[in-house]
Amino acid sequence: EDQVTQSPEALRLQEGESSSLNCSYTVSGLRGLFWYRQDPGKGPEFLFTLYSAGEEKEKERLKATLTKKESFLHITAPKPEDSATYLCAVSVPQGGSEKLVFGKGTKLTVNP
Amino acid sequence: GAVVSQHPSRVICKSGTSVKIECRSLDFQATTMFWYRQFPKQSLMLMATSNEGSKATYEQGVEKDKFLINHASLTLSTLTVTSAHPEDSSFYICSAPPTSGTREQYFGPGTRLTVT
Image (cartoon, rainbow over all chains, first blue to last red; front, top):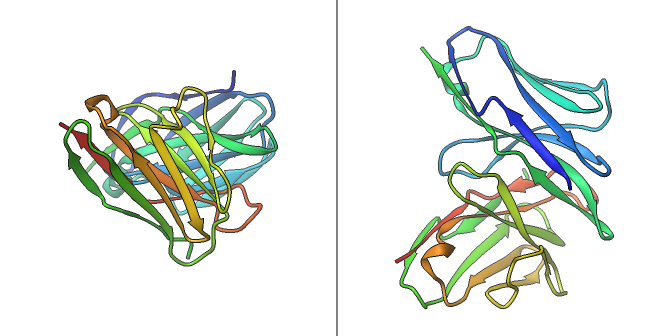
């Protein structure tokens, strides 16, 4: 069964305190790994797609990396506005198409 | 670009009634849209894949007669929750890939359904 596990479930940081979020996966055939940001009561906002081990993507204070078994979302010098739940998802084959399987997310709180 | 909207954002209905949720792609055409359900502190769970002009594909365990999906145009998919019960209360979110064949999905803002 395809599974995505995110850790930690919740993370509290002080403004400027860098850290990393983890997403580990066991899937039958990885077609892509995705990071999303979700604010309370809102739909997920697309951040990154990673396709192969060793790939890295950056956007402002965020950098996503991918290995064969896991992905990390590194947050450098976070600000309070980075507070959100960060979701990891993998695209896996289903019949003749694909579907996303999501982890439960990491709730990040950045205190000023 | 790649904006997906949903309507309504919140709905409260009585047990036994039906509720329709709309999902629209505003600046692109979507031959495929996806419907998810999210319970508090849980993952987004795929309910069904909506295909324009054909029947939706439902995930295992999702009752297709209860969750009716219609994808009548390239910019609109609807999810109707029929004979709603309190256990159907959840956050329903739709998504679509902005370009046919891409794997990225862009999500709508979600609809909070409360069944009393």
